[in-house]
Length: 260
Picture 1 (cartoon, rainbow, N blue to C red):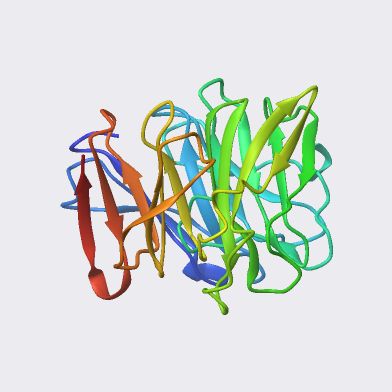
Picture 2: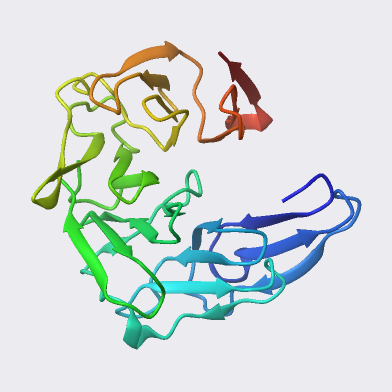
């Protein structure tokens, strides 16, 4: 949130999934939440502002497992399951980049799932009805589906994924929202060569950047076409608020910055 205040999420089975917060620039950290369920596995979180945030966990029953905070991550409560959609058999999320859940600028919440079933879900507000779309991406086994989603607005959304065991499989790893009457989703023709990707971010109103273990890819036309720009592999990234640079993190403590 600032040079002094930050929230961290760790991912892992059971109590290895935790949330920490610092208010002194990282000199000390407070443990704010420990996953109480042995079946839970934190996949990602996002904040709408410095108070309201949402967390996504693998399901611990037949419903999504969402946690919500209204005090900047100090405390978390589970969203009542009766207000959430059921998940399919073998459907869950991936923690690779921590970006399978995102707020759009209006406060709508977007989720991307994978596994036996891969879907895109959205609600305009917690407690309201959820919309659900089947993803045209690679899916059907425990290693495949969507890994990251990023909404520039409620009508301009791109998601990426693939199969983390067969990372070189191409053709259905980028999904783009299309609005002609009802919202639908397409695999852009210009993404045919994009391999497995774990994270996607908008740079501007037209430009996107995506990364994964096979490298870094760039689009200048709303995700319609893509080109490889960097061979080094990364798991996650974020873009500066001014859109002039991206910070990427990968294996063995690798951190890189791309500027343009």
